[in-house]
Image (tube, rainbow, N blue to C red; front, side, top):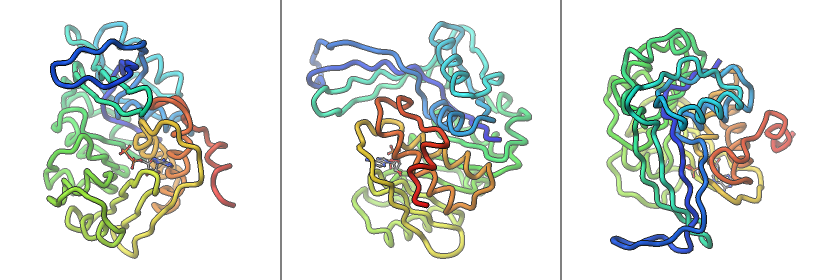
Length: 298
Ligand code: ADP
């Protein structure tokens, strides 16, 4: 089983001809609501791939909260441990998207996510999960408490990036940063790096396993011991990479929970994340198990 402790947001997607500058007003073409939040996106991806997924987090006692629970339930995610915060709204992310380029801006209002407390995560589904998926869109004390309570494999996506306490890093079995997050964690300048340079950065951050996501280039596996391995994605026609990193982690968690070794789990995650870029938004094209299998070379 896979348990996710993290954020649930309502994404407010507004389509604009041009992103506004500072002090500027632009009129949108239209707007749409979509379920989001890094935590909930990871849970949905894992749920669609294999079920047996539990979500732990907080939403408000409002219609947006109802929509987030319904969306997760329809992706085969158990939401019995998503708590309702009275008097604080469900988190939102307002995202203007430029029609031609697909470029965006994101303003997150954490809302109920900011109320997730250490007591909320000390639950059986966290303690006994084979794989626990964590990110940093909920307060750090809750993330640390979940990592301490876990008995299974702990996977942490350090996003949005923040310094990681040593005690937390010690509890993490697999760290999954993108290149930008890895550079920040290693106190290095942002920029393009070769796989060998990325391995060096990863080794500066932790002695544990690191999987660096590299966008269209796939992912670099840096195991705790042994040689690093670059896993390229299968060819896909990517139309929207929003949430690709979340799908990657959900798929990685599901594969590890199924008993795959890290390199194999990353191979599946790279294929699942590639498939997820072929449709709109964070959850518009979450692949099922068969879709991933068809993308993997036999
Ligand atoms: P984030 O979205 O968190 O910054 P990345 O951009 O590294 O993360 O993407 C996460 C994963 O999604 C990558 O490791 C890769 O497997 C997959 N992915 C992202 N963009 C593409 C793409 N254009 N084609 C194929 N796979 C992609």
